Image: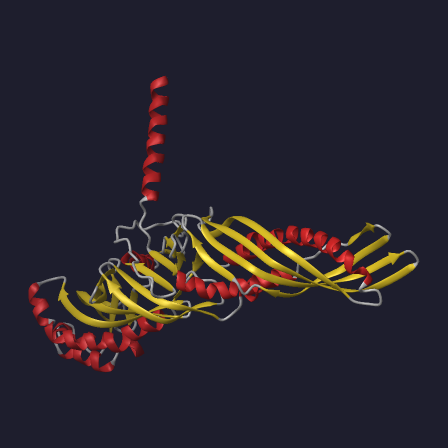
Length: 483
């Protein structure tokens, strides 16, 4: 009894071990690198966002007694922030550092002061100087495969604070300034980090949740952009490895094993880099194949008249003559891809090889279709990749075309005159349909309000690399508000 249980336990442990090793070694279908140049642009948006968050700090009422003075301080408002000495940097193996040094904050308070029998009210204008804020953000992959701020370490210090009283007895109260500003500096110090913690862990994380992890591309397929591991942070870049796998919507749990080359990004000159492996494109083609998209029936008005005449006056005409009742019947072509198309990416460019079965049919009125021949069609397309905003698109161009008979070598010879006309038919009828479909593109995993501009596409052995700069069409605050 003990031995079977032990065997089951060992088998389970072995399965978990193998699964974990496979998951750890899973190549990325899609990679994104954000460089320190991209961080410079993000710094400006981060600085504006932090200023807005600190402007909304709510300060508690202060009241008490100092000697013969009784005071109440209310309506504390931050009127101006000067965070001009701010830096946004990578922290290797951790995440991001937002560092503010030697900056200033201007505030205004409302005072109510009772001294003996004198009661006075007025405003206090104060300034906090030597404001230093050091905020470290730890970035991880969450359980859903999404980028997330996991932890924030914050330290805020204000070196000194000055206050200027106004009103009838303003100069009399100047000696209170040191006492009041000391308390206000203490309270302000205590408010800065909680405000930034809430901004990062709640607001920024909620924006990151809007970046699609698994989403629909169209009515046939979806895309999985889940991170396969924690982001890799160095002193110069933030690298994110995504699964980058398309899937058939009718079978969303199906997967395609990734045997492709793992993309390698070595560049740092642009703000952002996007690398896409052959697996990225193959999974899309495989998903469309499984969804039954690669099938076409060309008949009636879809059949070019010149092609139909050619079919009837060449080899197939002699077959029709064996049955005169079929001579005047319309013809059709049934095209069905018989295996998932394959992508090949080399330094010379990207190509897609596709094999299909072409059936030549006659459609006699009121009778079942009659098959005249079955051919194998081999095609090779050149694929040009482009990106606009956040959408990746492909333009296909037919480069090679070949047909041969599935029945005999003699029939293959007879089909040679049809090679050029059928290729022309594909270029004029089928390829435009493909390009009309692929030009819609697929979204890359960027937040709304951030787009690629000035992109440059490079082809490497096994993957495509797109270098670009970033454009913010929305501020960080607007991006968070709109989510």
